[in-house]
Image (tube, rainbow, N blue to C red):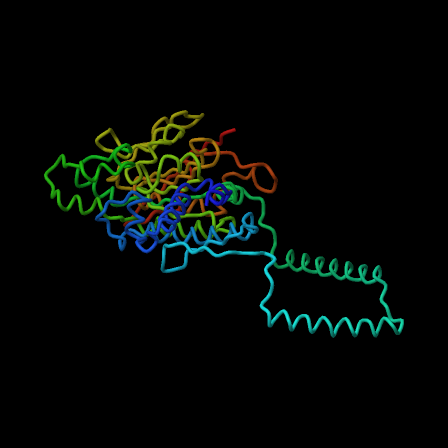
Length: 418
């Protein structure tokens, strides 16, 4: 197990490694029969004893990824392992089986093969005695020519019907967000938190959100139903637009399914912002983790009315840009603002992509812009048609929002970083 968790498929995924080691220890200590979704949720994912697995599928989703990652391990670097480990579907107890790459075939099948070989050997000797021996060198040459012909034909067909993905700005963006050597986590917004904000009258700071302490300490500045507040806090709501964005991104040609996970915002950890590639949807109100990386951003979205006017602050205005772009939700023309930020993760080992707006419609408009190859490529034409790496960038967008829907986003300002 220690060799497995030290392999490339596990070393950067602490959750899967912890999951694997926990179920293994429980099984080897004779407690495999007691492994279930609730006990694993408490031990591995720090869920409370009264949590409901029907509303929180984190154990099931990680178990599915764990099974796939084990298959990958034993097909590659673990191909010579003397034991094979599987976690059968419908169970969380691991099963170990001895494996011998040179194991003999079953006796009956082996006897049939030996009989066939004997017949072929006798026939070969008869042909040889008649002087019809094929020169080994000629046979090897024919085989090599045949293999070369097949490879050439295959390459022609592949190029004819599977044209290479063009080197556009969009392709480079998603190729840098999805890498075979690193996890990519797609994080929809925590809509429950927005409702709690409306009921309690204040946002939840990251320190309380990350540790889950806010569910026990949140109070109301204005009169409210505390019981209902706690019910909302325990729920895991998100928006359909965020889920559509997550699905659309996960189906991109550059996506690597075995390295991609969709995770709820409150299940993130600080180390994920250091070790993984993250795709975040929603502003700080719906995802407090944004506050951990807002210090790296130029276009900072301020969405808490208690802290001042709603606005996008331009930290380093360039020529012709404003230092602030105000947002008024009651403005008659329904003008909205949204931002896209492609920045390094906290360790610089990967990337973070954030789409956010003052409303669900604004965030959706930013998501549509960044997944529209035409929009991004038109804005960054210098990075199409060549091998130049796409640099980090930020974009400020303007929209028109009517009845919860946003118009096509238009860039107001954008910064590309060297």
